[in-house]
Length: 311
Ligand SMILES: [Zn+2]
Image 1 (cartoon, rainbow, N blue to C red):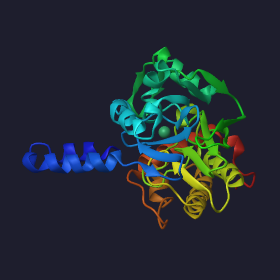
Image 2: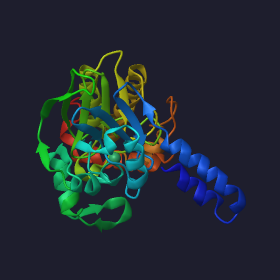
Image 3: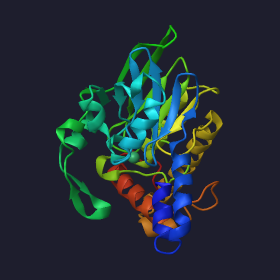
């Protein structure tokens, strides 16, 4: 969620005179560049996170922000040096909040790397079940230019000598069909897209195949990639410590166990709300039904993977 939209929506026509300075304050905060190391920063991409690595060859980005955030993003990138020239973009998944400015970077010469399924979802019209409509395919100019299936790795020159190793890999059906992580190994910064969601409700894009079992498995895979010093950059919200990421994995595992129990009893999403699947947890959901509806759809599609001790 873009905070400016909340301000605009909440105050429109009510506090017009006061909204203006608040809006400017909000924009300043959104534009803040969160420096993680000398070479890695997290920027605001219109409510979602954009990771930028400064390298000898230009900038390497993880995700390109939401549609219409491009001008502000580019201005912030220019502040990182090299006139904001982007060498490579990784897309963690196909959602517009992560791929919204692909066109601008691709047309300026950047290579766009993503999982094959991400390109598939961007290149065809696809059904948005919660909005009951088809979404048009993205223009070809926005599509990833280089895809992979499992993992990849490349070394890139650091600005002051040395190299940064960038490892990336598939996180199967954790949030969408084509989620990936990007691990800046030498800096120990791990970008995971919306496979971690510390602020907004975790989302399972079930029509692409995402489900709760896939999400927990992906988080377990990530736990093997990082270590106690790893900093985790989620798709939106604050950068997480390893302990915070582990805590979110524990929470999702608790939810998974409760969901398996309920689905074995033949329960639907409202039964899951009533059954307290999301109660007594360290966090609350803004829209429990929406999450549980998606979770139930994903569980029905994966009923053959439920534990064998079905009553
Ligand atoms: Zn997403």
